[in-house]
Image 1 (cartoon, rainbow, N blue to C red):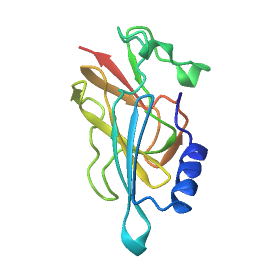
Image 2: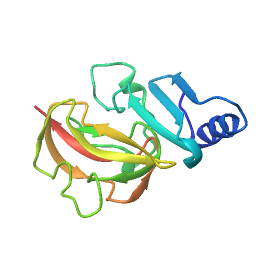
Image 3: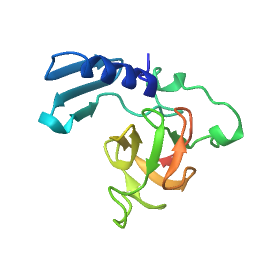
Image 4: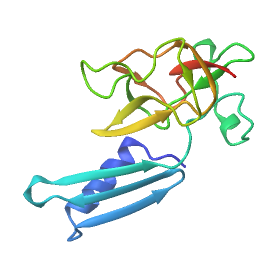
Length: 156
């Protein structure tokens, strides 16, 4: 089960009409904590528990990602790093900052290679594999579906 933007809107709608000051939500691969911040509305803290879907990974759950055409596929022996959820992909932590990684960078499984913004919530994207970044398929500030290839890594 994936949490869609509509699901997030529904959760926020329920919170806005409730007397709750805090909600802790756990769904398949995502933990989300929302706290009421006085008159300013809601703040969000999040922790993504799952790794991004990575083609060619030894983990069978990671291999279950649908590939829908040439733009969503990578050459044999390479690994596609996909977003943990749909949203706008950013290569840097903020405008004007250097990117998390560039093509040619060596990455580890936990290396942050970008962030995905969904409804003003920023979710880090981890490489999910050791290797070298070969190319970016999704540009900075572009929308990425959950099956999009953000970047391609040649495993070490």
